[in-house]
Amino acid sequence: MEKGDSGTDRRLPPDQNSPLSDFLLIERINQCPKLASLKSINETLNDLLDSDVSFVAQIAEVIRLDPSLTTRVLDLVNSIFFGSKDEKRISGVEEASIFLGLNRIRELISATPIIEDIMELGKGSQTFPWTDFWRHSIGCAILTREILSLTDEEFEDESDYVAGLLHNLGKLILAITFPELFEKVYQKTHRHAKDFLGMERTTVGWDHAKIGAYYLWNHHISDDIVDAVHWHHEPLRSESHQKLAGAIQVADFITSGMGVAGLVRQSSPIAKSHGELDGWKILFEDKSSQEMETIEHELNDTVERISQTLHGIL
Image (cartoon, rainbow, N blue to C red; front, side, top):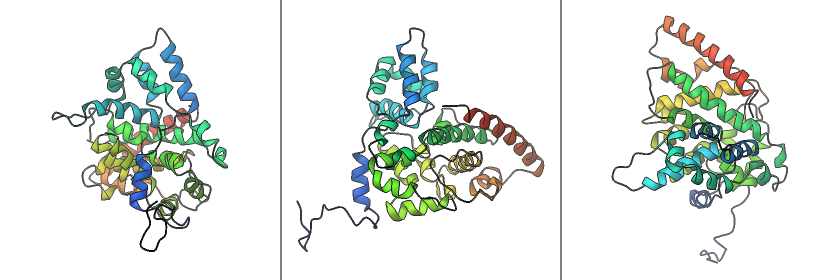
């Protein structure tokens, strides 16, 4: 082992109370094992793949319920084109599924670990509501798309939905790659959701948004998704995709307000309105009061519909 000038082992882990260095974080995230899927989704997808009457559209619809599978499918298809002069990254799950074919998807599913099985190995990890994590991700995906549909912003592919689905992917990576640090952060209850970000940064070194964005960038996911995931808590800091990041921030907030907060253990109820969020102001600051009344009405209808759907899914 390499030694520093003081003779100490430079490869020893840092003090457990100190955040990890960028170099160690990058090394460990690069070595992250395959992302895990939720057992129920994996089983449903396997049943579809084994059926004689399955269609790619049906299979893609199930993949869209899973941040892990969506990431792996897009990574697989985009890695084929990576480095080409005419590189156009695919963000649509169905398009990616058609390109890969059922056999490649079947191989991917067979090599996908199950989150319930992985986390059984960790101390106390069964207390984490993994189904709620997936449900929150799906809710944010649907709401991100719906919120953007109320603006003049249009997406030809599925990047709006996919960005919403993958916004908390860093939490899953943290759980798989740094299980002890993950439990140290997420076993605690905080007064406000933003307190988890601060604890991630002081305990791990990066928060889940940066971890997820780096992982996605490193796995050939399109730049708009990477940027929006990185800044979904601070959309004003995005230099090129503020509206997408802002829509995710609002969707995240509203989904949590539905009682689907994912892994967050929060002692204080959500007090402020989504209208106070930077993301909301980015999206709708130029709208008239009459337009805003219509937007709020449409959003309320959407939230009611999605809330009923989420509590019956998975």
